[in-house]
Image 1 (cartoon, rainbow, N blue to C red):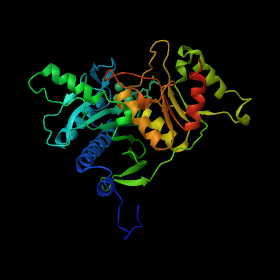
Image 2 (image 1 turned 90 degrees about the vertical axis):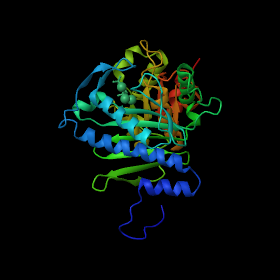
Image 3 (image 1 turned 120 degrees about the horizontal axis):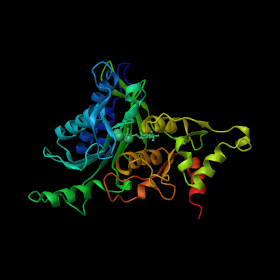
Image 4 (image 1 turned 180 degrees about the vertical axis):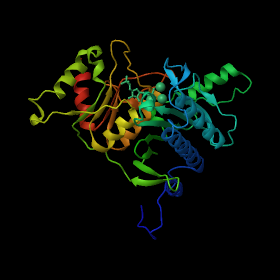
Length: 347
Ligand code: AHG
Ligand code: MN
Ligand code: MN
Ligand code: MN
């Protein structure tokens, strides 16, 4: 950003959005949607930080479409996202990990943006006070399939599904918010990756990480090795090679895994390395969802000079067929993902 004109000047997310709009990189409607997402993240940050006090830990008592026991904060965070996105008047359809089907937003005034999100990622960590996050992606409405079947609910639903099931290569914006020792929003609109840290005293996200570049190599791997026995042979061979003391000049890799994709990915983005959630004998497509976990994170990784792969193809090239479709994910430093692919692309 330009040099500060006064010691009291704060380069906030609001300022950054305004400048991107003035440069013609985004339109006013998209800026409004991103602002509404940042408001949702501020609200969730305060809910998460006080979960133990306001009786918001523990399970809600029902299962979501993923077959997971919803945590109370999964449900609350989902409501917060839906309220913020609906009331900004620029969102046409939303898809959430916590919604069986996409939801057409009634209060759309203009813009009609499509927003996909994981309102609370890593929610199994909430009761232990370990870092969690939110992940989101924003698309323009699909030209091939306008949403116009107002009087035919079945057709309308099909049109909404078509509008959220777009390949990650069409994302206009992707980001995540990390709720940890600090609350950090990281996003891209296709011209680099920018990180904003919440100043809780002012309630504003302040630019703290302009133009993030992921290190080309990194000696940290982030996999749930508890699943090693279920992985196929080439992923096992890859993992064995990372831990082979005779390689890497005697300096083996370090393992770091907290069970929150947002936390594990944010560390990978800043320090380098690789995060992986392979397919396994139980779930050949792994656990992570393409639409609101793998694609937004892969857009960010690529914009920071890294890569996001399913092991056999670029995540952003995958054309989603179902809203909650899963894909294997290997994401991080370019050289590290390429090394992984030298095992998984073997015939
Ligand atoms: P969510 O809490 O949104 O369902 O996502 C959890 C995901 C991801 O955040 C994390 O990396 C992964 O699940 C952890 O899975 P395991 O517990 O199987 O390692
Ligand atoms: Mn979940
Ligand atoms: Mn998640
Ligand atoms: Mn989630």
